[in-house]
Length: 137
Image (cartoon, rainbow, N blue to C red; front, top):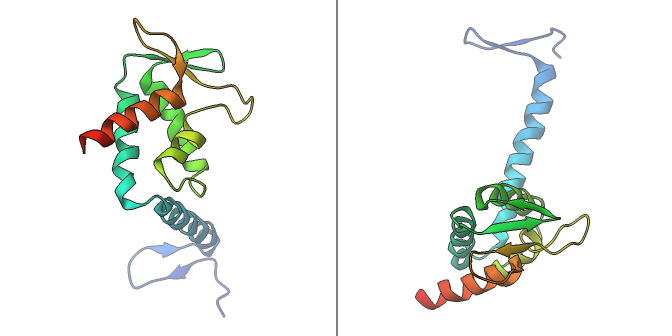
C-alpha cells in the first residue's frame, strides 16, 4: 500500500493520487458524451450537420424567448441543448424537437424571421430545410 503523497514513475514526472479520481471521472464523462450521441443513425448524422451549418450561415433572425439572435448565436445555444438531450435524440426530427424548437424552461416556441417573409417557428423552418435537403440527396 502506498502512503506517500505522490506516485513516482520511471519518468521525471510524478502523479498526485488526489488528481487521479477527478481525471478518471472526467474521462468517463467524455466517453459517455461520445457514446451517447451514437443514437442518431449514421445516415442521419449528415442531416444534423447540414442543419447546424444552415443555422450558422442564415441571414435570418432567430427569436428565442423574446430575445433576437443571429444564426451564430442561436447555433451555440442549440449545440448546448443538443448535448443536454443527446440521449433522447435518435433522429433528425427529434434533434429539431429537442434542440431547436422551444425553450425548455419557459415553453415558448422559437421563431425565425427572414427578410421579406412572415415569421415562422424554427421547427417548421428547419423541417422545411430538412425536406429540401433530403430531396437533393
